[in-house]
Image 1 (cartoon, rainbow, N blue to C red):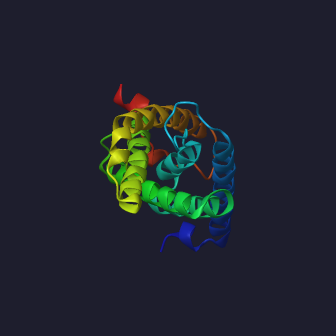
Image 2: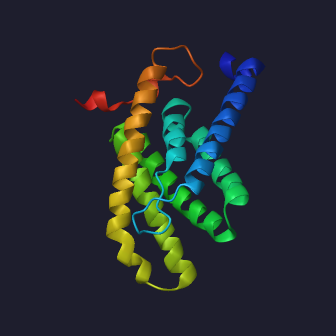
Length: 188
């Protein structure tokens, strides 16, 4: 058996670190809930909390990233949203995470590429939820704009995640697992 898994100090440290990540994701979600982007498309956000999900995917792995992502969506929806916003966030977050995890495991894309997929599929998932719950096809009119916003916000978050992951390599932290990290510089 792996000694690291048996050590209760590592387990406690991991739980504490993941708890701090949930708290930070909640703070970022709250900040986003009070900022309204003036672009004329309902519900568009920068997706700053997805930045943490991407970082966790590359440092801890998909299970921990999923746990933090789901916990953040649930708590943010209950504290800052409505029943429908919680459903939309869950659908968008689950689809986004599924696509990011699938592509991450195949090592086909960089951090920024994974983040862009996350942004695009989060918006796509929310659009699918809107069509399902409101039984109208009109929201598909927004699809091109939602894809563009997903690409832009995903790229921004991916660039930030790459910078954070690169900096983590310089310090001995619990968030560093260099063997699993692929930054954009790997593909140059």
